[in-house]
Image 1 (cartoon, rainbow, N blue to C red):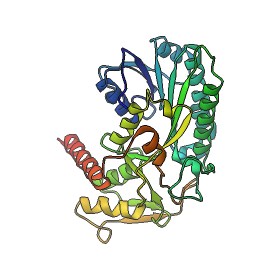
Image 2: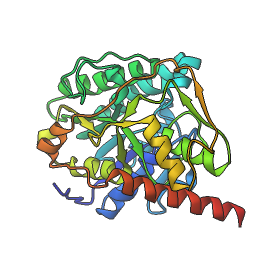
Image 3: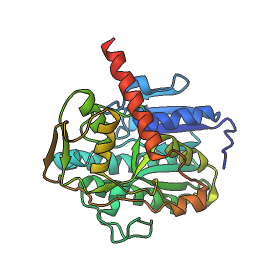
Length: 327
């Protein structure tokens, strides 16, 4: 369902990051005004579309939220968050503060300013090691990491606020449980997130590839273009109101297969390139694959970027970035 921009303004929290900046660009292409709030903890100002109003600020700071919501916001895309499982164990208080308290504050400001639509970036990590794979939204959550717990709590706060919002200014909320998002523009140097980008960065820097566990653990990789399409398509779609929806490709990819693909694309293999195996990290999930039938049914969303095509595109982009750095 194509949205009608109707001179509306969307606040994108975390809009200087990988997912947020791509969503912001898609919104602008559809004619929306965009306001971005980001503290640049992992994002970068260079990712911000020039057409957007940019506010350097933090979702935990009410003065910054005031500045953002005073821009006459109609829709909130809440994407800002602490996105590292490993960092959530290193500093659980900060993880809770950013992902849960920050979400509560964003939601409360949406209520205060009469914003009618809020979409929240949740995570597939809340499923833990599910008993059903591919995993549907009805599968009971079993979060294994502090990060997963904080994201699940944020999700529950958003939906509870929507259900109890003022009758004259109701909030229609949707939570997207996103699986492993990848694509051009993802950080190649952030060792805390994005295993595909981490592997690419390793090869470009001639570093050993580190695999935690035996590499047989699986992930569901979904291209950033498919993700942005789902977010924009859902803005005016009543079927998504009050819903939790998986956004994943539905394809099971082992870490070993991912490693082999990256190496072969660079013209090498695991016989000649150094691979280091390490113990599993805290909170690691063994098998993660989306049942995306709900997104197909409610949004009419079907992933369009095939895995090999999207990953080859991403490696070409990353290689070009490396050439530009050396030029």
